[in-house]
Length: 406
Ligand code: 5CA
Ligand code: ZN
Image (cartoon, rainbow, N blue to C red):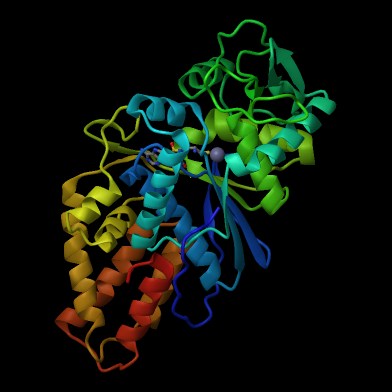
């Protein structure tokens, strides 16, 4: 499907730095070491409601990786899916008496508009689950032929144990896997399964629900095989980063990796990077709980999207964090201080500050420290000024290219 418009990124002098980040799979901060072309897959939205701050924080995190790679001379092949057919979408459409396709189209466009406003660079390929049903069905048949699938009544399940490295993404105990699978779309209680955590690969038609024809018979693919087949199709195996929020570690990323291993070998991805959960009013911001702060609503109320982005960047991605209106106020102050400092004709030299900003990002995406480097330069500009005519321009181009703040 259509991605969203790209915007131009101001040129910077060549930066030499290697990005490190926390890989859930190995439990350590490690260099990502992509090739000339870096390849990243990030799990996209299920379009049944508007983009909230938690979603935005996830896409801003991966946008920071995207921008860092571009600034350090890589080309980037970035793939994001849209789960435009899934139970929650059908339930919401039924509740509101609208066609599920219309609901999805409306929310996908609202998401694009939010991403453009937040200056999130578009993925190279934005791929819908609906347009990938054939792709997924072919992969399900391959898994079946490899002996990694089995039927339960008319449905087909993936046997997680058929992947030798199953468990290497989340490192969870079996009881924890069962608990999480029940919470996140699985059906551990269903009789007839070999292992309670085994996920659906192909679901036979249910009354009143959409279905697609395939050589497997009518039905629709399971969630994990959708993402695994889109990633393998557009990126190939052993791509650099599998991303998404931390709520996707298990079962989603574990199962996609296991299916990928059976299909194309290990590793499915070379690193698994997870965004923290943003909470609000004491619990994880989630569509099912309804404790949401929407990006579109903030924009409509006149909030500069750059303050939303800066508020997100002020938080470390290594820990869950609570959203609060105060974060927006702080970001607004910072933004006006930066803009004031950038708009003067001369200022302190900024090479060192840009180096510090780059180094902070390369060091496990330390965005709070990156912002502090810009703060320090802006403070120097405010207190003492400087006579370097290139100082403010370089600083503002670096902030634009690396942090996405205009
Ligand atoms: N369509 C699936 C992924 S294939 C999905 O999880 N969709 S979603 O709409 O629920 O979430 C979209 C993205 O935002 C996912 O990467 C998810 O992990 C992330 N996300 C969801 N809630 C939060 C939150 N409260 N904080 C941070 N990230 C979140
Ligand atoms: Zn996904």
